[in-house]
Length: 113
Image 1 (cartoon, rainbow, N blue to C red):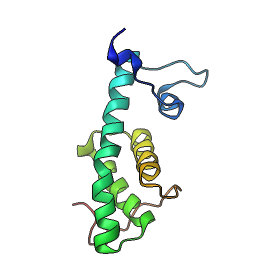
Image 2 (image 1 turned 120 degrees about the horizontal axis):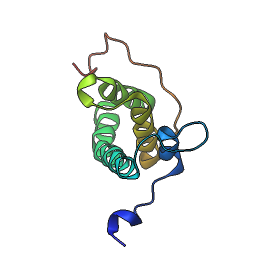
Image 3 (image 1 turned 90 degrees about the vertical axis):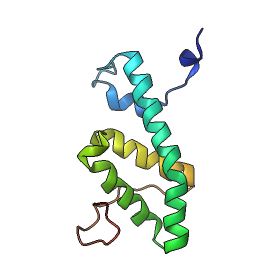
């Protein structure tokens, strides 16, 4: 058994790529690759989120919203469902309460360009 086969993909991520009957709409390999990419993204964003929250004094929900705005940018190559999962996972990694956040205003000075 390869190490790749030992990666446990959470049900919450599998649900993003399953039809209403629970069958995957993408291959197992694609699912694993998408999961690893999204998990890596969430892990990578932890330090930045903490920095913005602590150093700039931005509220936790606004940090998540701002990161969400960046993930929503077409250049992120992440679809909306995966971006939502990354935000939820990021909040979980940070120990922050998760709630769906409204998009940040275009006038926000820290909004990604």
